[in-house]
Image (cartoon, rainbow, N blue to C red; front, top):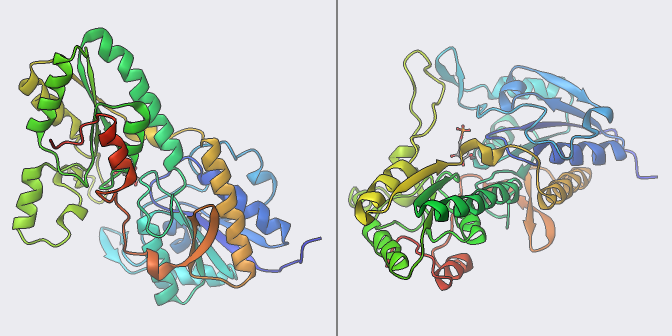
Length: 379
Ligand code: F6P
């Protein structure tokens, strides 16, 4: 029999959803119940914590959810310290802490990406509560972990899409530009681009020169290749845009989201972010005019965030979830569970929050792409 614990833990999912969230909730909940802990689910991310919207998690509730996409708890991008309330941005930390205390929690487990890491740290520092986080995002851009959960599933979806585009592109002798998510990190596009054999891969970390891309496509054409697949990350910037930003003196300019990624709002829906403007259409239009080859666009969008997690993500989420409970039992709070090598290890939240892990230009995947005749946007 395991040692019994009377601890009570809360769990919430925040930020954009991804495959594997339910698997992680299940991993945390089952391990916690194994040790006799009580688990309270918090609905819709930090907003549910502020508004005290909770449910008791029992065994039947987390049975059969390992393979399900999304999060049965619901998610939101709300931050307790900067929450939109009645059209205003308000610090709701005190309300979040009140719910934590009312539920008599010993620790709050937060599943999320970079925004969630920051919110969790702020809650522990300003609200004095115990938190523990798991790194979740299809973007794979959380610092201090080798990988985030959700990334592998999204990469599998994007890879399959690129595979499918090959057959139609070759039938019609076209350029097909495929836009892949990732915010301002190129992991998803680069990984899926290599795995799917894209001929051009454009990522935010390497500013592109479209003339160089067009030359690459023309060389392929002359070599008898009947089609080309161009994988573009949603956060790409051209060499000119990058130079303009450097010139404007903004430090870390390439780390900032480019203008087409900035959210805009429709009149009457203030406070609700609208879809980003796809960059792939612009690239396709310009490539068609530079090469004279017919081009088409596919934007994968939220398809990449839907559906069942891969076996890799199911295993990773279950390992992350169970490790979280072991750490809580040992009193290790205010940490994120990270994968380093093949080990799940705790990392202080201070080392994670506010940092973003983008693709280093000298990363092994970049070299892999170059050595397999893939154009990365420059000659
Ligand atoms: O962070 C995950 C992510 O899917 C990014 O790749 C993308 O830029 C963003 O979320 C889209 O957010 P939303 O679902 O709010 O439109």
